[in-house]
Amino acid sequence: LKAFVFDAYGTLFDVFSVTSLCEDLFPGHGKELANSWRKKQLEYSWLRSLMGRYRGFWGVTEDALVYSAKSLNLEITANERAQLMDCYLHLATFPDVKPGLEELEKIGMHLAILSNGEPEMLRAVVENADLSNFFTDTIFSVESVKEFKPSPRVYDQLSSGLKINKREIGFVSANNWDVNGASSAGFATFWIQRSGFETSEELGYPPTHVVNAITDLRRFRSPK
Ligand code: LAC
Image 1 (cartoon, rainbow, N blue to C red):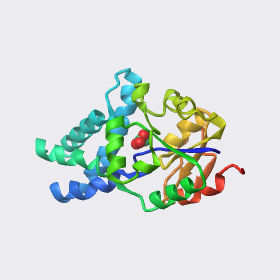
Image 2: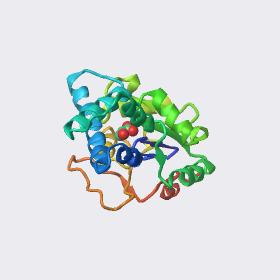
Image 3: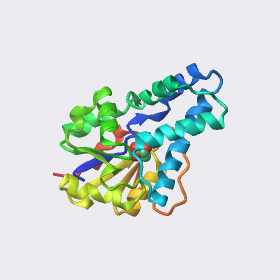
């Protein structure tokens, strides 16, 4: 492998770092709101792809927040909505992210991101997490194909985008459905199973490798 391409939300960035603000704003409902928000965000991305009605991930994320608050009978003001959406630009990174990326960079791997996020929201979260130096000009978004993961068209942009042969690209995600999508599109895949409790999807395209953290990836570099 010459390149590792990372999923963003859930893999580099902890989407559940929104939970503490959810709990501050809606005491007793923080976890429920955060869980529903993420679940609905993904559902809307899949539904919109099927409908052929693309809307940027920022809008999809906001729609999912509005739906989730409504479904839990929580009254959310415009200001609270804006505060919660702003969390998406300041998500926490998992502890293995920076050390893992540093190791991979040191051994000369090309590093990239491929995400549902729009380029602007991705650039912001990457910059706020101080990861910009790892991903100069290598943030790829579904925006170019206007269909969400796991459409094969999303993953297929990687080879031309990176100018690296498909067989030399490893796709890394903690989202098992995303791994299935990239495997199905013909990539070598790495499923990050951080907690060890996640269940594999029954979609038929399992990961090529399972690892516990980004710091486990360096052993997969091609021999020089
Ligand atoms: C992404 C989704 C999987 O970052 O959250 O593409």
